[in-house]
Length: 325
Image 1 (tube, rainbow, N blue to C red):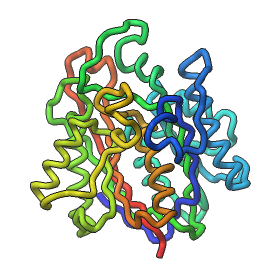
Image 2 (cartoon, helix red, strand yellow; image 1 turned 135 degrees about the vertical axis):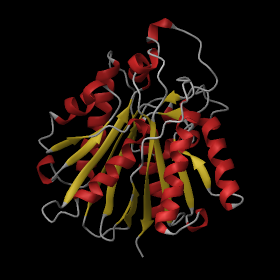
Image 3 (cartoon, rainbow, N blue to C red; image 1 turned 180 degrees about the horizontal axis):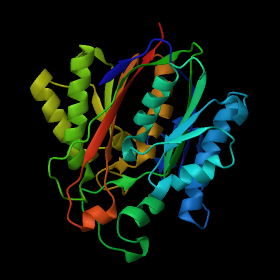
Image 4 (cartoon, rainbow, N blue to C red; image 1 turned 180 degrees about the vertical axis):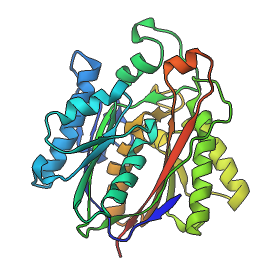
């Protein structure tokens, strides 16, 4: 299902990146690069997420009391990173879980809520931390096992955005809510190819519902399908629409996979959020892009289900961001 909006605007955003991300190709676009020196991985993620939100409020010269609603989530059990962050900010909070697709789900849900006259603005946020995610979703960090070349590298990022009805330069014009897609893929070391069918399901639905084609966008992004999943998407789009020259993946933009040890590219909720809210947003404000489609993807699993040999259900949500004319 695709929703269209005329008066929902992305006012501003802040992205706090980790050390490795701060050495990558997009380092000059981040608002801050954190040293992530907290002795606890989970506390470190809480810190960078709070810093991103706090910096955003300071940029807008507002306080938490001026925000009507916060919508966000990440990868931690029971969304504890979000809850432990929001306990310091007295904002009504709606927690969401979309795994790595969280930023698109959050922006889309915020846009829908903002159609309510009683809501004037909404804070949307997400985060991820490499070591916290490794500890929860894969082998314990201390295990030191070898990684497969199909695996991705969870980014360390805190990202926050403010949506409102106040007319601005960038508007959220479309939101396609995805469906859970499970093709029976069972390799938990290859999330990219597992999520590619969900990305294609949402992209094709978005194009059909909006009566557009890839050529109607300056840039189409997925996040985060790895070099393996991105190849499948490129091939499928090319088969349907002809040669595709305006497609890329957030996990491949965030890092230099040839120079940085990130295997098949970046992943984690912070990946798509970091690329969209720093690099893409600033490129659009500079006039480089006018219309961008982001289709963020998520693998909806947990270690228990994987250990029981279950397949990987996945989802993708899409957001169109446009320069207001």
